[in-house]
Amino acid sequence: MTRDYLCSADYDAAKMMELFDLAAAIKALAKRRRRLSALKGYTAALVFQKPSLRTRVTFDIGMRQLGGDAIFLGPSEISLGARESIHDIAKNLERWVDIIIARVFEQTSLEHFAAASAPPVINALSNDEHPCQAMADLFTLYEKGVKFEKTRFAFIGDGNNVCASLMIAGASLGMDVRVATPEGYEPSAAVIEKARSLARESCGGLLVTNDPRQAVSCASAVYTDTWASMHTEHEAQERRPLFTPFQVNPALLKGAEPDAVIMHCLPAHRGEEITDEVMDCKNSIVFDQAENRLHMQKAIILDCLGAVEEARREITG
Ligand code: CP
Ligand code: NVA
Image 1 (cartoon, rainbow, N blue to C red):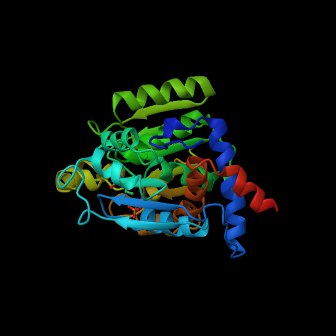
Image 2 (spheres, rainbow, N blue to C red):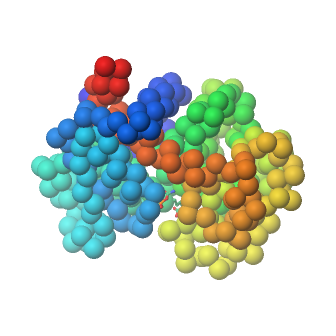
């Protein structure tokens, strides 16, 4: 059976743990330069309406490492809803490809794709969420032996798409999630409510504050992202002075656990949301996160295509 992966809430804690375990096995295999053939004959359409380094490369290589193929369709090939409706694009693509991996502006575009197309759809980033990023980030903590329950995880900066996906996934896993943003840049009320209710169920925690020191206090992981995202780039200049007190720098990190890991989804704006010193420090795991996009997303693709069991047989066989 196939399934879409459009937002963090699509996976509960048990599913996340199962996929972390699969990603670890797939990564170990890839380290031995072994590829799988579970997706032989399968093709992915990578429909990207925004720029990308990590997501594009890792989905493309990931499909090939699973035995399949990928075709990239950028904004110059298809401009969603302008040259053709999303419905009609989906109805065309479903005749040729087996999975649609889309980076879009509106979350509703993904929902329209999913409603119209038989092949499953994966969210490769929308204005609202970046769930594959959150899965790779949490997998990075998992493989480092972090026990999620009660682990204090601080997100500092903009209450953006990456923040939303991390809040929801982290709260499901029972983490103590703490978010600090400037006033007016908090995650949406719906995201806060969802994360709060998941945290209640998992006995985790959720704090949303405008005080970065309160958020990092005793945190074991400190995460930041760009102050202006691709869809809010036009606000970059006006945001800078408001976000400056939220820079992740050695002074702010004094309140965190001494061995706290430093996380960033990248691309980073060194000297803005994170200093060179912090980005390059020994506790920085930002490039581990980038590496793990590849392996985590292979597990997600297999799950969406209902091919997990076949891949597991190949791994153990
Ligand atoms: N972190 C991330 O999604 O990077 P790209 O925008 O380069 O894909
Ligand atoms: N919040 C960023 C994430 C980039 C990977 C953006 O949407 O631009």
